[in-house]
Length: 231
Image 1 (spheres, rainbow, N blue to C red):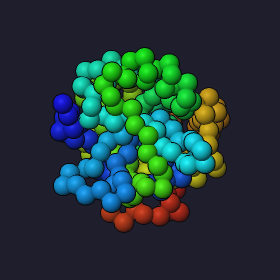
Image 2: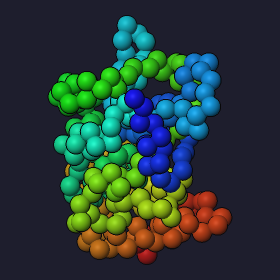
Image 3: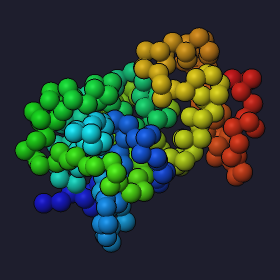
């Protein structure tokens, strides 16, 4: 049985293109594979677990969501959900699900989590990187999937008025403010930079609101136009 249609209804924020080298664990991607032809609006939805080489062949491995009942996906993911807001915000800006850094260790994550909890759904997949065409990033509405609790700050949640393109722009601006690419930081280092730069969480949240308001304006396409000095 396919649960594809259910997950399509859970998509939020549109999509953004991504180059294959930028695909990371925690992303949800869709792509064409080889000469595959499909009438689907979205070709597939794969939760990326990692990339590795096997016999000199670069591979991507992940979980094909359409084979997992929504309730089972929730029960699985709540084992690795992040609880602290700053780390959740970092993941959102990276266009990843709100998962702990366990997912960044793909082999052990597969052995300890996927294999023990999801393997019976025949959802684990490997793909040759060379055969992946036109990958795009998508995001599920994690709030509707009940992965957030009542204490989660709104800044960590993608709402219906945001697009993934705008979130990507916000991250570029934040990188400029922090003078660092947050993709290269672990959660602990990211939190330290936020504390050093903004002093308080309230100041950080206020700056995020400013970023959202800026990128939401028509024509706000240049990171050099945002006044970071007031943040």
